[in-house]
Image (cartoon, rainbow, N blue to C red):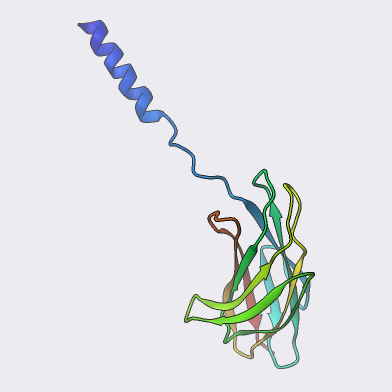
Length: 163
C-alpha cells in the first residue's frame, strides 16, 4: 500500500511540474530602428517637437517560420495626434492611414513579396513629424501573414518640447 501511494504521489508531482504545451512559434521577427531625427539609446527614443522636426524609422520583418510566406500586413500604431506620418518608402509597400480611435491609430501597410525562411521583407521606412505637445508613448508594430498570429515589437519614445 505504501508503495502504491508513493507511486501515486510521484505521478501526481510529475504531472504538476510538466511544462505546458507550447503555443505556435512566431512566424516572424519585427525590428524597429531609428534612422534620423531620433536620439537617445535604442531602448528609449527622444525627439524635439515642432512643425519643422522630422523623424524616420525603419521596420524590418524577417520570416522565421520555416517555409515561404507571402501577403504581409503591418499595422504601425502610435498616437496620431502627436506623431503625424508625412511619408513612407520601401520596395513594394502600400500604406494608408488608420484612425479607428485610441489604440487603433497609425498606418496599415501591405507587402506582397514572397519571402523564404530567414529572409526579410523589404525595409519599410516611415517618416513622421512630431507635434508640439510633450509626449511619452510608444510606437507599436504588429505584423501578420499566412494566417499566423500577429507578432509585435514596440518602441518607447518621448517628444521633448522643453526650451
